[in-house]
Length: 207
Length: 207
DNA sequence: ATATCAAGTGGAGAGGTCTCCGGTTAATAT
DNA sequence: ATATTAACCGGAGACCTCTCCACTTGATAT
Image (cartoon, rainbow over all chains, first blue to last red; front, side):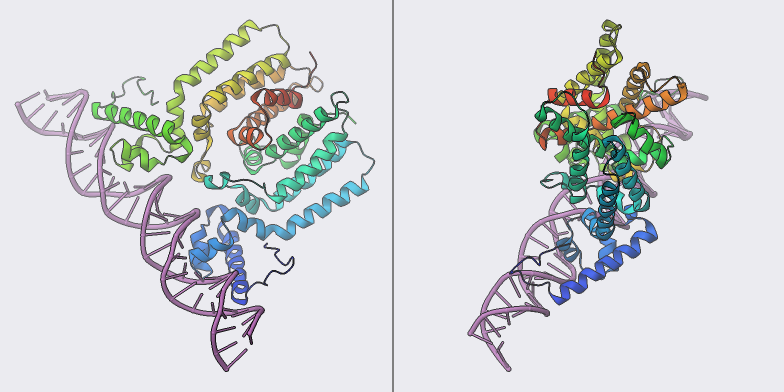
């Protein structure tokens, strides 16, 4: 997660590396025994046999930990999306949006527990959200690119751009754990139905 | 908030009534001195000179407390919406939707602190969200009614209905504190711009 | 007036988050 | 081999949420 191999930076200390592994192992163990939502940072520290301070030094909250645990899968998701975009280069933006959303929903279905953990933000974390998570940021870029290609309102570039950014934001909050879970559990929609409805709502072009 | 005057129910005890008032006063004082987000239930109990248990007996969390504090304003909001709908009976659904959203955004701007407090749900509260807050539910109904009137996809009633429910849900999560705050603070949009973009996104009919 | 008892009260305590900081320790320079 | 030092460690502690329960008290019946 640190990715600080950049240049003249010291390598990670041996003991630190070991502790990181212990944390990851412990978290994984606890998460799939009890679900990410039910496990506290405290428990993780205990299970990993380290002090709370050590845990918090590496991960400021559970969200960061979950993100680290999903790193590889996130890379895979973006690979899938890239591949999809490649092979559907000539589809309409709406179609491509549908494809992307469908891929993401699949990802969500697979990693639901962890993803929910990522977004279950502790109130304090909202204070300085300078950089939204890379997951969010990257997805946002991709979505914006598609929305911009849609035959929008007139030809004012600036306006179209702003609107694309906004729509991408809205689509992402619609795909957030909170919203998605509500659609599944309260409204009783299946993943496929959700994809369908999102299409009708955000890119209803018929083609 | 209790509204239990229904039938053969005992009236609220005098001491309980007094404590409720102390709580409300204390909360109001603290909230507008430090902002709803920064005030803990503990502080409120202390300021009100009661035990934590007493506070929690009446309000299961800060959200409920905030809701109680806003009760009157919420009633006013719905009065406004009703009046608006009355006087614009003949406008297109899109226009009416815009009007409703505008009213709500105005409300949000006025009561932002408290509203954020309402939605800042403690993770535990999500466990049994059998009944979404009345605010949400009532707004949802109104929105659904408008979406249903829109020239939708064909004439299959059930499909149109499902889509209206979904769109109303999406519009409401777009209007949630989290999403709204991000548009203001991260994207730098003004309330008016947000209303505008919501229109373009959710009911772009040009009339 | 008094007895009754559901409603109400407060605080101890379990379990969490997160920070701080004095004491290590691994990597590096000498 | 030794000194240096930035990174790391762990746990005490501040503050929080929320529950439980022995005790008190106001409203009502008699």
